[in-house]
Amino acid sequence: MSETHAPEKLQRKLGARHLNMIAIGGSIGTGLFLASGSTIANAGPGGALLAYSLIGIMIYFLMTSLGELATHTPTSGAFFTYGSRYVEEGFGFALGWNYWYNWAITVAFELVAVQFIMKFWFPDVPGFYWSALFLVIIFMINAMTVKGFGESEFWFSMVKVIAIVAFIIIGIAMIIKIMLTPGVATFGNWTYKEAPFVGGLQAMIGVAMIAGFSFQGTEMVGVAAGESKDPKKTIPLAIKQIFWRILLFYILCIFIIGTLIAYDDPNLLQAAATENIALSPFTLLYEKVGFAFAASLMNAVILTAILSAGNSGMYSSTRMLFDMAQQGRAPKWFAKLDSRGVPMNALYATTFIAAFCFLTTFIGEKQVFNWLLNMSGMCGFIVWLGIAISHYRFRKGYIAQGYKLEDLAYRAKFFPFAPWFAFILCSVIILGQNYQAVLGG
Image 1 (cartoon, rainbow, N blue to C red):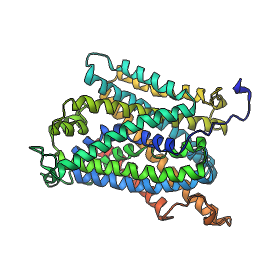
Image 2 (cartoon, helix red, strand yellow):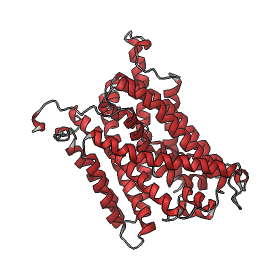
Image 3 (tube, rainbow, N blue to C red):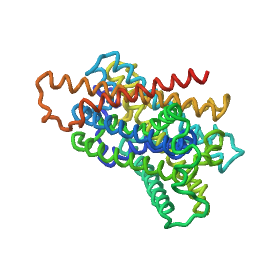
């Protein structure tokens, strides 16, 4: 049995294209396809675009910080290892468990979103049936070899990329009047009523949490470093490509939605305030063009996106738990690998937390959806705080011990401004959520 061999190591079978798509798979899902409409409805096109832009800049800084750390020390423990080594043992311990919990409940969040999407086609079937089916699918994919997981995630993510590129092309064509769409105001929506900024600073801080949730997953490249073939080459390449693709996708999509759909459009408001989350702004735009079966087509794409994001989340949290167990920060039982090199015990534990999606049976879909969204978003910002602090401490210690920056395989830009910017922005958003909670009574 493979479990008798020590130490047990993950298999390095992920190439650069797998790393790209794992991060894209984790970060492009319900945050863009479903929640983007509510950001515009709550903060206006300008507020939403500014929030996504600020978070995007912060993510760029964090990705370069992570690139420097991951190329120097490639490990599936990523943030847990860096926090323990460069800051303090307790800091790394807390960061590792937070990240595992973050993505475990994000999988649960995606499985709740599945219920809304499937209700579009099968309104009379109880939602928890669909959550159970997709949980089994995600579990089985993650139980394969890491190469099999990487290939499945590559093709899942490719569907999303194609859908977004098509959306951007059609949206730009509508804006510049190549595609004539009667009743679409285009740039007039930026000066309509309270636009471009609706609700002021408080609304934008609230939207920033959703924007942050949308960008979560870009850091997965750090976790996947432990199973990449040549980390010193593949990670810097993946980080550059991942960031620009995701940033362009998000910024262009938010700009197009805000330009073509008024912030107080009844459909956007309905999607933001009711359980009809299947009313994606992507679907609304295709319907304005007059595409037949637009709703069914986009809901199929969104379903694939949810499966992809849940798949990446299950992978990332499972690897984090495995690495913590190997280093004695979680029960050793989670450090066992099967004959295919998969940490099955860690996968079982993560699947158990993902089963929180079945709370919808007792509490209600919309309420559980919002709970999981807020919990995941907050945990994600804590992880990003940890990356910024760990990189700052690493670079300071690296120089203090007499090493040369030129010897680093990848060197982050804009140090020390970049980690300080990320630290301050994350802190403001986290504290801002508490401020909103107090005002909300």
